Every structure is written in C-alpha cells, then in structure tokens.
Amino acid sequence: MGKKHLILLLFFCGFLAVTICGLKGHAQNSSEQRKKIIQFSGVMVNAHDLSPIPFATIVIKGTGRGAVADVSGFFTFVAVSGDVIKFSSVGYEPALFVIPDSIRADAYSIIQPMVQDTIMLMETVIYPWPSKDKFREAFVSVKLPEQDADIVRKNFNLATMREQARIGKMDANMNYRSLMQEQVGKLYSQGQVSPNNLLNPFAWAQFVKRWKQQKKVKDMEEATDSYQDYGGNNE
Image 1 (cartoon, rainbow, N blue to C red):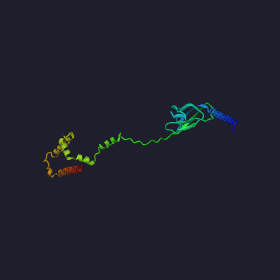
Image 2: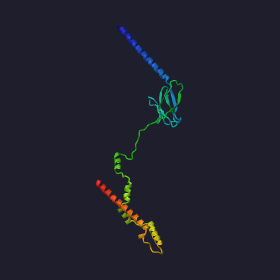
Image 3: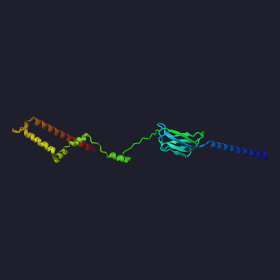
Image 4: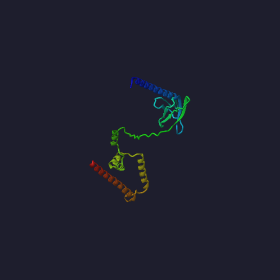
C-alpha cells in the first residue's frame, strides 16, 4: 500500500468518526428535547376507603429528589417526563408510577391509591425477671402454698392450743355466754333440788362427745409427731 492510499484511509476513518459523533449528539439532543420539565402533583389515598395518607414519601427513582406529603396527603415537586416515581408509606405496599412522555402541558396531577400491607412481627415473650440469675434466685426462694394437711396440722397442734388457752383471755362475747348459761342453769333448778348429772343421759352424751374430740386431737398430734420424725430422718 502506497503512501497516498494510507493518507486516504486515515482521512476516511476520521470523517467516519466525526459523522458518528454528530449523529449521537443529535440523537441525544432529540431525546432531551422530547423530555419535558413539569410540575408533578397529586394526592395519596388509602385504596380501601380513599382516606388521605399523611406524611408519605415520594421519590424519583434513581435520584435523591422528591417530596413528603402533607397532613392531607398532598404533594408537589418538579419532575421530568419519563421519570419513575416511587411512593412509600409505613403500613402500605410501595407503588411505582411512570410519568408519560406524551405530556404537552407544564403540569401533571394524579391520585395515587396505596394498598395496606400486613406486617408480621416476631413473637415477643416478656418475663418478670431481667436476667436468668434473677429468675433462678426467685425460683429457689419461692414459698409454696400450704396444703390442707399443713393447715390442719397447725390448727390442731395440742401444744399451740394449750398455749393459746393459757395466755388467752375471755372477751365480752364469751363472758356473756358463760353468764347466760349459768343463769339458765339456776332458773332450770329454781325452787327444787338440783338434778344429779350422774344419771342425766344428756350429760353423758356431752361427756362422750368431748372425750371423742380429745381422743381425735391426741391421735392427730401423735400422727404429726410421727410424720415430723420420719421427715427428720429422711433429711
């Protein structure tokens, strides 16, 4: 290849490169001319009852530009035709909207419905103790409720009953009942010889009843002592 042909080849490559750059620049200018700057406005509402969604976020996807809706769900900001708008709010599913390229006016308004989103939270268990050590301490020191046998054992403890009888004093009710019984006994035998209770069947019945009660208390006391001795030996 001669020197003349090489110069022609270089000239042709340069002309082709300039032509391609010119075509790309023209296409880009045409694309930018097709995009139109508009005032984008609208209202965000609940799709269920059309109530306004306050303080929702509206952002142009891929950029940091956008706006925040007011208390009535209204928003407005400057955008370009063809932009992808993302709507989001807490408790609602995100929504996307593409601004049409065929807009001829300088403003565009929409009503954007939002569908409520169900948020599933993880199960949370609240304990009354702040740590495992506190729980272990509370569990070890817990006092179990008394059983019926323990309550009966305390109530029929003969030593305790004797001590209460020794230090106890008669109240007004007991004094009144004792006086009334004495007066009734006097009125029953007034003007005659006092009856001999040795042959009185009612007196014998009362004696037997009290004897059975004392025997029952004694048997329970012996059973309690045996139970305590058995428990002590096990310990």
